[in-house]
Each structure stands twice: as structure tokens, then as C-alpha cells.
Amino acid sequence: MDDRTYTAHGLPAGPGLETIDDIDARFRTLVQSPLRAGLLRYLNARPGEAFDVDVLMQAFGRLRLDVENCVRELVDSGVAAVVDVPGERPRFSALRPDEERLAILLDTFLERRATISTEDQSPSVQRFRELIGRDEKMLIVFEWIRTAAKSDISVLILGPTGSGKEVVARMIHELSRRARARFQAVNCAALPDTLFESEIFGFEKGAFTGALDRKPGRLELANEGTLFLDEIGDMSLIAQAKFLRVLEERRFERLGGQRSISVDFRLISATNRPLEQFVRDGRFREDLYYRVNAFAIRLPSLRERQVDIPVLAQRFLARYCIAQGLPPDGKTFTREALDAMVAYAWPGNIRELESTVSRAALSAPGRLIRAQDVEFLSSFAVTPAMSSDRLPSLAEAERAHISRVLEAVRWNKKEAARILAISRGTLYRKIAEYALEQRESLTLPASDDE
Image (tube, rainbow, N blue to C red; front, side, top):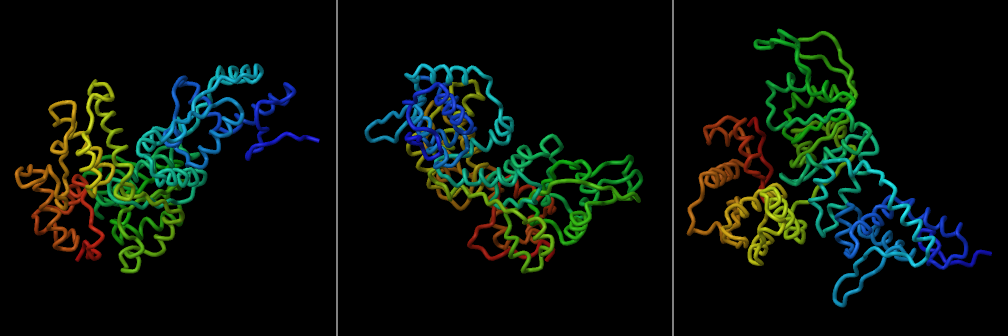
């Protein structure tokens, strides 16, 4: 009868095993888990250092419970140690086993070339890991991404402007079986009906004036890959009807063409608009809504995870310093600057935070970045940098004016463009450039065509 004790994951507990076979089996079982194997390599690559669970969560993009369980298994197996400091969270470090056979197995494992995972090869995953802080909301999103990448199901990414929707779309593509094929991104907000067919379906030579040669559309280019429709909530009803037909039949004709072309693509869509309300209002087709919303991923706004703002700001600042040839700690925020950033609403989310940090680092005269060096773009926030003692820049004045006009006409872009005396295309570009977003307290906008 086997009277040994076992851990929660079925590993024999403790190093006190009697046979070499038992030790070998225990170690093989330990490193069978990619996360345990990754943690073991991570700790041994940094001898003399100790890491808390938050750091390991960010490094591997895994939920707290998963990391805690796996690192405890390493401790129980005698290949990692707990570093307890009074008043601080436990930290974990590499440990050289006393047991000679276990030490030999560990050395052999570390000498073997590590298998580079699909996640480690993905540029978008590396970018997404930079957006993970202490709040677990983004780690939960990471789990949804991993789930979505396993199949060809249509995904709808929901989230406010600047929250990283395209990064998530590219992650799903790069982690899926279609990663070797193309990723085609289309911004529906910047695509009027007159250009929709030629951009999506392509055109034949002579299809219209100026069509001097055949041009493949985004659908054709996305064959066997992924088509990403950004801001799908801004797609017109005419465009919705044409695109729905392609989704149902997986066939289309180029503009001016006669031949039907078959396509095999994975659809990922994104929006910051209330699509369910648009369906009820008749502004978005119900049948298309159910087609694009087979699996939904919601990205939290930055103000929903305030605890991450100082972490992300410091991370972006270190990256800025490295890009400028400075040491990672070449510049640092004062406590007042961080407090001002935490108090700010961040309507432009991650994108706005990153650009704000870069501006602050550039404008700060010395190593310290003070509160007065941090300039916020939103006209809705009163901050030290936007006080009445400083005149706004041209960009700030333009952003504030466009925002006021949009609010006054309840985000009716056609009417806003008329008042501003600019085209709707220019207005769309300004909205994206200044990361403008409709406030939740406002009523739903009227149709762009009203």
C-alpha cells in the first residue's frame, strides 16, 4: 500500500522518496504542466531574486489562483522557496534541491532548450501583457482570448475607445490556427457607403472611373485568415445587408465582376457603441448582430481598474526612457503626479494614458515628472495642468470645441459636421485622433443620417 501524501495536483509531496524511479516520475509530472515548467525556468533564470504572485501573474498572463497553485507545487517539490518578509506578501525564488537525483533532473531540465510557446511568439500577446496590472480583470480577458482562439467562432470585442480592442483581435488571430495567414483590419467608421464595396469586395479593371487595374478586396486578402471589422456599430444599413450575405454564403463578387469568389475567413468585430440598443432602434440588423456576437469579450475601461493606473504609467515611462536611450529609471513620477493620474477619468483609456506619459516625460525639465508636467486632453476634467493660468494649445481647443458640438447635437455626426463646416470623414478622423467618446450620462445619439 502506498502511504505517501500527495499534493492537490497529484504530485507526491516532499523530497523524501525512496527510489530513483519515484523521484524521476515526480519531476516528470511536475514539469508536464507548461505553467509550472515556465515558472521553474523563470525563477532559475533570475537567481538571487524573489517574486511575488502579482509579478508572476503579469509575466505569464495567468489568473492568481493558477499561479499560486503552481508555484506552491514547486515549493512542495523542493525546487522553489518561499521568502517571507514581515508585513509583505510572500515571494518565491529558485532553490537548489538538497536531494542529488532531483538536482540532476533540474539541471538536465534547465539545460534543455525551452519550447517557445505560441503565446511567447505572438507580438500582440507581448503588447497585451504590458496592459496587465494588479487588477485581475485583464487576466480574465486573457482567458477569454485563449478560449476564443481555439475555434473559428465569430467574436465581438466590446470596450471604450483606446482600451486595446485591436490588440485583442490580433491576439486571437495570432493564437489561432489561422495565424500563418493574413489579418485584415477595416475601420467601418472611416468607410462611407461609396467606398464600402470597393474596399471590402475589391473591383475589376474598368468597374468605375479610375479603376485602372483589378484590385482584391479585404475579404479576398483575408482568405484563410482573419477579417477584423473595427467600429462595426458605425456600419450603415446598406453595408450591413451586403456584408450579411457574404457571412451567410461565404461567396462574393468583385465590383464590376461576374465571377463568384469563395472565401474562408474568421470574423472578429469590435465596437464602443451599444449594439443591443441599436438593434432595438432599427439602426443595426438583428440577424447580423447574432452573426457577429457568437462570443463576446468585454474590455474594461481604465477607470474600472484604477489600481492599475500607477503600474501602467510607470511601465510606459520606463519604455519611453529606454526608447530615448536612458536607463529604465531615467525619469520618475512624483507622488502628486501619480495621484493626479489616478484621479483623472481617462476617456481615451490606455491609448490616452500612454500618450500622456510620453508628453509628460518629454516636457519635464529634470528627472522628476511633477503634477504640472502632466497634461490631460479631456475638457471635462479640471487638473493642475489645465488650470485657468495656462492657455490651451490649438489641439486642446479644437478637441474641446468638437466635443461640445457633438454633445450639443447628441452625437449626430451629420449635424455636427455641418455645424463645424467639415466633412463627416474629417469628423470621424478627429474623433479617433482625440479619442473622443460619448459620455454614458448622455442620451443615445440620433442617427448619422438624420
